[in-house]
Amino acid sequence: MDVPGPWYLGLAAVLFTVGALGLLVRRNVLVMFMCVELMLNAVNLTFVTYSRMLDDIGGQVLVFFVLVVAAAEVVVGLAIIVAIFRKRSEATADDISLLKG
Amino acid sequence: MDWLVFVVAGVSALAGALGVVLARNPVHSALMLILTLFSVAVLFVAQQAHFLAAVQVIVYAGAVVVLFLFVIMFLGVDREEDVRRDPLVAQRPLAFVVSMLVLLEVLLLARSRWATGASSVVGPASGPGSNIEKIASALFTRYLLAFEATSILLVIAVVGAVVLARRTPGGIKSQQEVRP
View 1 (cartoon, rainbow over the protein chains, first blue to last red):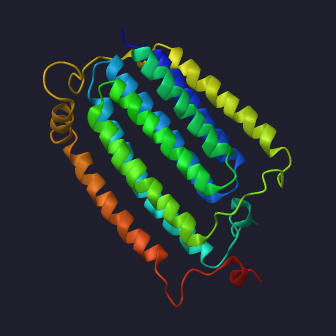
View 2: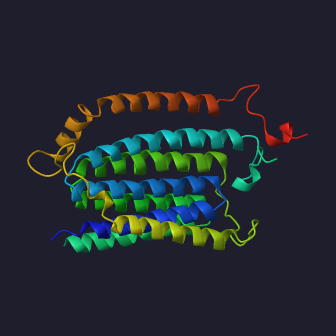
View 3: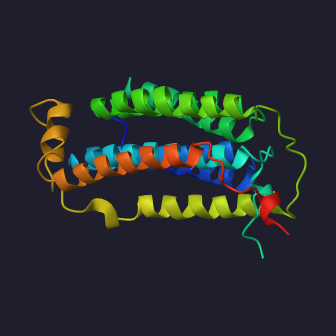
C-alpha cells in the first residue's frame, strides 16, 4: 500500500516552512544559502509527488531543471560571498548594507 | 513497509532541516543539510523517481555541500554565531509568524483541487520502461530547447564565478573604501 500523496505534500510544506524560517532568522549568509537549498528541496519533493499522483513524467523533468538552476545559483552565490568576504571578515548579512540610504 | 520508509525518511529530513536552522556552527549546518538531502533522496526512491534520487545524492550531497564546506573552510567563518544577540527588534517573532502563514498557505494549496489537472500531458510516469528512459525521452524531445538553455546557463555561471572570485588589482571595492 503506497503512502498517499497528501502526506508527502504536507511533509514538503513543513520542510519549506523550516527553510523559510531559517532564511528569516539566521544572519550568517552561508547558513541562509543552505536554507534556500532546503526550500528548493521541498519544492522538488512536491514536484515528484505530483508526478506520481498525476502519473506524468513532466514533474520529474522539471525537478531536473531545478537541480541545474540550483547548482548554478550556488556557484554564483558562493563566488559573490567569497568576493565580499575577501575585504570584510564579518559573517552576518546585517553588515552588508552598502545600498542602504 | 512504505509507511515505515516514509516515516523514517520524513522524520530524519525534518530533523536535518531543524538542525540546519538551529546549529550554531556553519559546518554542523552543512552536515545536517546532507542528512536532509539523503532523506529526500530516499523519499524520491519511494516514489519511483530513481534517476532523480541518484542525481540528488551526486549533485547535492556530493557537489553542492562539498562546495559549501569548501567555502566555509576557505573563509574561516566556522566560528560559532552568538544566537542570543538580536540586533533587529522582534525579528524572531515576526519570522515565526511569517513562516506560519507560509505553512498555512502551502497546506491550503495542497488541499485544494486546483492542481489535479489533466494527467499524462508529457508522458506517463508508470508503465513499461525504466524511469531514466522516460525522463530522457521527455527531456530530448519536448524539453530540448530548455535543456540547451540550461547548458548555456551553466557556462554563464562558471564564467561568472571565475570573474567574481578572481583576484584583480582593481577588484571589488569594500564598503569601507566606498563609504565617505
